[in-house]
Amino acid sequence: MKKEISKPITFLNHPGQWQLRSLLEQLFISPDPDRITAQVVDFLHSHPLPADDFPLISGTYTRTILLRNNNGFEAMAAHWSPGTVSSIHGHPFFTLYYVVTGQLAYDNFRKNNAVVEKTSSGRLSASEHIAFIGRPDTFDNHIHQVTAMEETLSIHVSSDDATKGEIFFPERTVQ
Image (cartoon, rainbow, N blue to C red; front, side):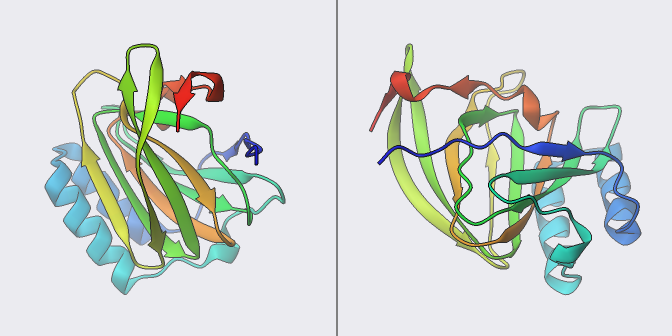
């Protein structure tokens, strides 16, 4: 069965969530991936964000930018319509995902010359997170594809603009 890849719609400058933005502003001054992961996860466990605060569009996912720092670090909320599938893509040096509500399935891939090979699969449910540290100055770290198993709100923190991540195409994929 062929997965229908969704293109996200991005919203800038979410006006709310001032407590989370304040925490992120402090963490981004001298970014340390382990400290960011621990403090953001702790904050989101004790301050769950309401999914209704973020736009939801059927058949895709929306990206709402929570904060972009001039050093490259950014945080965004992704609101996933059920069944939405992302492209196979990589990320910058550091990436943290936290599922606020819902459930995401993911397939991980490894780059092998001109193709990517599937290496593992998993799921993240509400209050679960995963963080990755890769090679600096590259955008092919933590190559994966995400599928929303149900309506899902997730928070993503990256060491650079996540849209700079390398995209991989199905014809260059080994399952």
